[in-house]
Amino acid sequence: MDVALISDTHIPSRAAEIPAAFEERIEAADHVIHAGDFDSEGALSNVRAMSSRLTAVAGNMDPRIGLPDRATVELGGVTFVVTHGTGPHRGYEDRVAGIVREEADGADSDAVGVSGHTHEVLDTTHDGVRLLNPGSVTGAAPAERTTMMTATVRDGDLSVTLHER
Image (cartoon, rainbow, N blue to C red; front, side, top):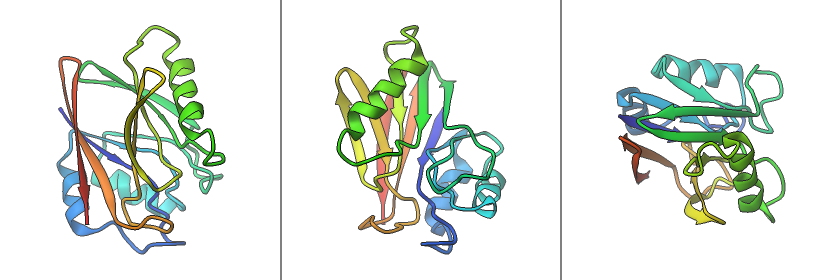
């Protein structure tokens, strides 16, 4: 199963659209995970039009688009816990890893956290929890480049690739 990991579209406040090459990757994915800050109902609708298989959460710029703050989805034997990661930069990894532990409720110690907010790419293991931040799919400030991740999940194995422009 191929999964597109995206975040921080910030359309229309900081960007006009998702780059075409990234749209193609999103449309080709078996499932899409968006870690928040769509910035508008229109941006959410646009991503939903690219994939009917979407797991998404609200970011701090999404107060009225009807998404949860956290979501959990199992894909290909891997449990993904999705949250935006809202809050100060200091303590970000602790905060997101804590949310992953809370949401996985100890049932799946191998749960992977997908978050956004910082616009900085991250693929690390923090205090035993793998954390993925795909950066900003539109390159919205303060991002220095346009990024997303794709993940291949199969029988509990996870392989992640970063894509950037």
